[in-house]
Every structure is written in C-alpha cells, then in structure tokens.
Image (cartoon, rainbow, N blue to C red; front, side, top):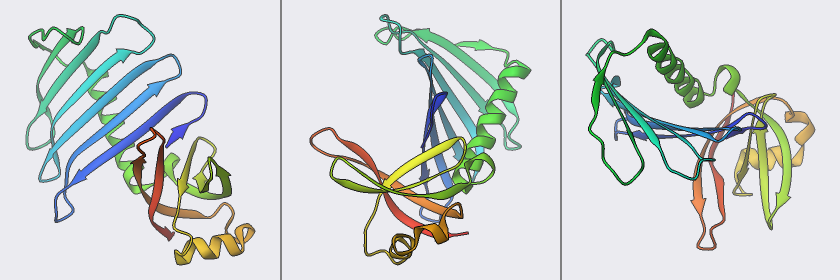
Length: 198
C-alpha cells in the first residue's frame, strides 16, 4: 500500500495458528528518503518489545539508528536502548530514557498498524476500478490518501461481480487481504487472496 507524494508504507504481520499476532513489521519511506522500519513483538497479543531502525536512503554512507523499547504486561515501557551503526560495526546498545514524544510516536504507529490491519479510519479501502500494466490485470482499491493495485484470480465470485458492473460498486468499502509475489525477473507485485464487501 502506498501514499502517493508523501510516503510509502508496507506492513507485514505474522500470526500464530490460533490467529494471535506474534510480530508486525511496518516500513515507511518518506519522500525525503528517510526509511523507518518498526518491528513490534507481541506475547499473547500484548506488546512486549518494539525495535525502530531509521536510516537516510539518500546518504552514501550507511548510518542506522536503532532503538529498542521493552514493555511490561500492561504494555507500559520499562526500558529503552539505542545505538547508531554504519552497517558493518555493531556498536553496543546504550540505555536511554524514552521521551514522552518517542513513546507517543510508538503509540501512534501502533494505532496505525491496528487501523491498517482492520482497514479502518484513513485505511478504509474503496473499490476504484480495474486497469492493466505489464501484461497483468489489476483491481484498484484506495481512498483520497492511499492506493493499492492487486492482481487477482478472474474466477473469484466477487471479482466477477465487480468486473460485470464496476460502476455499481464504485466507492464502496471492501476488506481485502493480499500477498506479495516476487518473480525470478525481479518484478514484484501484490496478489489479492481474499475480498469481502463491508
């Protein structure tokens, strides 16, 4: 999923067999080249640790600032550590006091992660239409801020309905699930694996 003009955003969530969330990775790249990768670790669906790695992709010398924050069973931060590395050296983590601003930022990203997973708020996805590119057909979902293009199985019942009468479904909200595919040629795209009308 991406937000045109301001930043791109990609989320990956790992679940237990029972559906409980184990880990979530959120990668955001701003238009100015700042990449922030936040990895959230959960224990019984309670946040136990978050690691945030920041780097400027426009700089020729790699410098990554990592921050790790550990949480108690009530999801309150109990300790935080940081280090800056250049990708080859492994500087030791130094304990820091997590500022209120940093804590609020983590909470904000955690809420964003929840909204993305539940496709709520600014991440509610509307059907926008179909298009073709690179010899593949795509179905497009999005809103005023975010946009995603997904390849699809043409025989999927709801996709057939959308193709038959796209104007009828235009701007209606759908829940979607997708998977990223990487071809041997290097081409990467997302495939729709589940869709339901809200």
